Image (tube, rainbow, N blue to C red; front, side):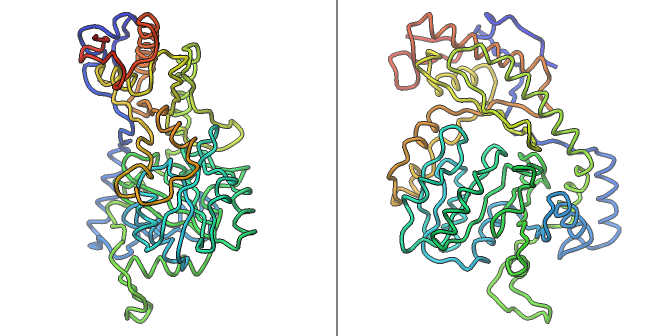
Length: 409
């Protein structure tokens, strides 16, 4: 536990936190439970190739999300790529640019052309009207992203897909164990891809999965992950080695019975942040719907520089100086990265605005209530200091941040 400090001390000569606090610090499962499961795998002598641990993980994840098929693979990016390939798409895929770049990479690696559409300024998810504006004769699919674990407007995107004869898939990397209108994410579109990376709410250290009710998609992903082999042992399609191993599967199995407690703890931390930041001008916490099942894994904040008195990057600099390893999300957005500069960039105003304003703050099991209060104190003190210094500031303004956490001329 970190000792509480008065807000005035948060921008002093020494960092407020003696050790860095980070976004996405992995949740370590119960060691006894995990070691017992690993022992079972070692005793079995089967470490990969669809052993009992992977099979059980797939069954339990499918049951949790109410879907017929869960196909576990080595990571979330590959899960999305294999789902896109299984859908037999061609040409262009419409997706948001306000997402982790792996979403766009999966599209490109599947031999498809990413076309970026703008997002809704409130939900941060793909805007159905913006999608419709960028559809061409070459478009074959829409790829939504359930950002922060909050579902896309599935009905609106499905309507656009239906009217234009397109397939609909989702990147659900943030949305393990989350619901939309009472129905679990993982059951929408032709397929949804999940990440089980160590920084996610549920993890297998490295891993991912495709969830689907579509038998053809499931069969294709199963073959692709294992060199294209069919039941006869012959390669029926071109595939690769994308299998999840048994040890990684045990990491996931050791967590499944604790997910409700973890989500409840995440929600308590979320509420502490909401309370601690609500009176700071220009700081708004991304809201979650209390009507849905959610994992509350991300604490995302928008910074309005006109109200706060400093821009997002200046706030991030202050937090870093205090050993709070906050992360700008998603900055730059995909379409401004060198790998995607040749793609269409029309009509992405909200994406670019959010990419300048959004930051994720540390949360999760490693953060105590006192830690969260201290982070909120730092944000409040930074805003107060910026106000005294005369308004917005940042890396490109006349003032710059010194390593001590105070503004230097």
